[in-house]
Image (cartoon, rainbow, N blue to C red):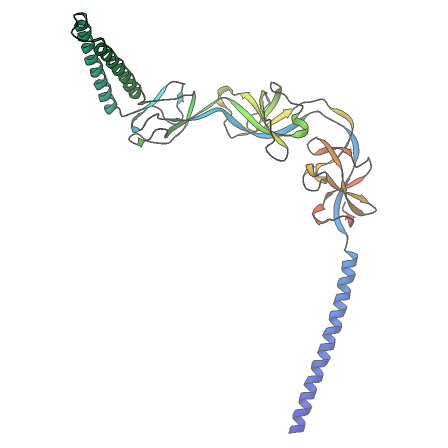
Length: 351
């Protein structure tokens, strides 16, 4: 019995050892195959383009968003209950027009009281002036009576001004875009009641590259193509930012007339700028740059090896960029697949 058990155990151990050596041999074979595949596929598939000289147009375009000519939230100058609102969303209002009114009963009482105080002060002054002629009061008493009249008149003016503040007046002309409160609401001084937007003209705001902004001036005429309207409209540059907003882009505003209010704030448009063209310009595709255009780095291909190369870029012509130095006509640059590359990586060109 023992002998049979020992034989069985030895048989099982033998089979286990055999499986172990088979697995090791298969592992070694798989590793050799993977190494061969890795050796064959160590190059990176990319797309390339040839550096060339060409004649370029002086026209370039930039997309942007239309802004209103003016936009303001109309608020009450004092606190109180809103008892009347004369406009609704979509109403047109003029600068100086009353758009609502606050409760002013307490203020009217103040006006009446101030007027009564002034009347009493004036009557007292008249009595003092008559008495002064006969020596009944002194000059000091007469001066005090005159000062009381002056103070009472100032208080009446102040009360009248506060009473007038119950009218909520629009400071700009335009269309009521939004209503913030309803009649009956108690508002504080400065609480917005409605928003008024002026779109009699609109401003297309675009961000222009540093290489282009130096060629623009306030007052220049620019063609503007709205996304929602056929045909271009003549606009005029009314603002060029003195400082870049980021990535060397400068905000530029182009004012465009807005007949019949067809253009709305928030719509998209394209500004088409013109400048003198150029001939025999050395260019590469914008996609050739590693990172942003301002980094001025590209991969140059020589003998199927990609070399990370520092160049100097110039004017941006949309999908192509001028090359000032670092490349020559006929050089080959990578335009797709740079994310998988490092300096001196072998490459395989895709057709």
